Amino acid sequence: MKKITLVLAAMLIGLVGFAQESASETYLNSGQRLLGKDMGKGITFGGYGQIDYNEKDGSAAGNLDVHRLVLLFGYKFNDKVSFLTEVEYEHVKEVYVEQAYIKYKANENLNVLAGLMLVPMGIINEFHEPTTFYGVERPNVDKYIVPTTWRELGVGVSGKIDNASLKYQAYLFNGFRSFNSKNEPGKEGLIGGSSGLRGGRQKGAESVVSSPNLSTKIDFYGIRGLRLGVSGYFGKTQSDDVAVDGTTVGVSMLGFDARYKYNNLELRGQYIATSLTDTEEYNTLTGKDLGSKMNGLYGEVAYSFDLKGEEKLTPFLRYEKHNTHAETEGFAANEAYDRDELIFGLNYKVAEGAAFKVDYQIMNNAVSGSDASKQFNAGVAIWF
Amino acid sequence: MKKSILIVVLALVVSGFTVSKRVQVLIDKEIKNVFKIENYIKQPINISSEIIAELPLKITDTNFNKISSEDSLLGYYYFGQAYGKADYFDFIVIFDKDLIVSKVKILVYREDHGGEIGSRRWLKQFIGKTSEKQLKYQKDIAAISGATISAKAMTREVNKLLKTIEILNNKELL
Image (cartoon, rainbow over all chains, first blue to last red; front, side, top):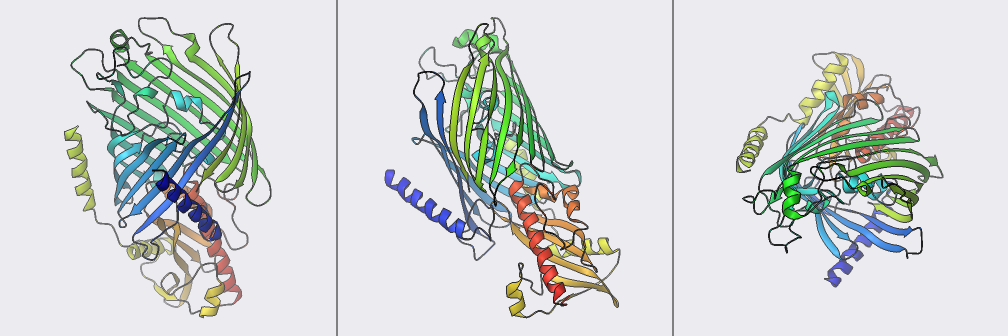
């Protein structure tokens, strides 16, 4: 396995070198066509990487991590059919497949898609390459409430309506897995209070499906510089033993997101609200502390200073708030799960697709008398 | 779940049979729309291979044409292709006889991401532009979050086209 990784790394380095040579010709495309002569078919190669340094204030040691290294492969069979996959190495040792889907273009306004795909909820889940967001780590609202990177197996349609400046997506996915009867007693419940639905993501690995979940999103980009999104997600979680009461909960999520770019100013905002049903039965059965309502929101402002050539220096500021116990059924909410955060930092873009990042987070929760925890982060972000 | 998959497969099969117009038919429709005419004559321009070599965009006798009706020159059009994130997209730029952009349209967009550049409102920004100055993304041309690669590619391609037109015009080849 190590040899394959080395060969892949060598190929990547070779490709990046080649990409830079023809940079003036092929500006920011994320891949190179290897079988380029016939434009009707071809392979596309690309990738992104996020390398982090995190240090909490206090005496604990810092952490250095190749948090994510993702390789993208695309194959175009013909003008209508293509396949795209992303293979992800997390923390160097964990391998995942982040996407693997086939796209059939029915006409200019409709694509049919099937496979392992990203659930359209919020900004980061769909657009998570590290050079597309500010801050070393992804926003905590996306981590705990969305929960990113959220990808499941499904079928769906996507398309655009040019005259209305609208993009639409609708999928049927398998849902979060809330229960695994094969785990040891006390560990059968997979979702809970501290990280919400995050532990229920199946990620395409022998996913259990007991009922389909519906995921939809509409994006509007008719106002210059502004992009608005509304997402909805509805369904029940999955269990391998639906006969038992309390192994699944109902999930309803609504997401609103907005991005605005004008000259050197960038603004972002997002609000996600989640409603879960049958949480009392679930918690009784599994011993977990799953909340019945969760929500998160953030607002961010960034301003770029143009340096020489493509280089830009961007200070940014973001305020985040999320709560996995916004409401609880049958027990008192844990105030430690009502978290808020202020993050500010700098993004130094050195080329299209490459940036150095540095930021500082001040994190708090609603427990009275709690001290703010602080963390310094620095990192490298790549996307090609 | 089985029923849902069946419905999707049916939708796929049915929509696959939708007639997709060939690109030339789309181009004709746009030209007739812009110049408000029923018929037109198109002619390629004749340029030597030395001149083509110095142009930012390679002009051929199929991708660039003069548009005339009877005896008067109406304008020009360019059919181009640019690369988005993982595939090409096809577009057309129509100029009036004074070399001012009259219309830009994305004819074929292949990927499932970045198709936002087809938005009529976004493309309207290119109308009225001339080779006077190069357009800067996010300044002269509004950004589209989530379609940055294709939007930048389109902006860059239009810039190359405007520069090409300027060179051809200065050499009195149009």
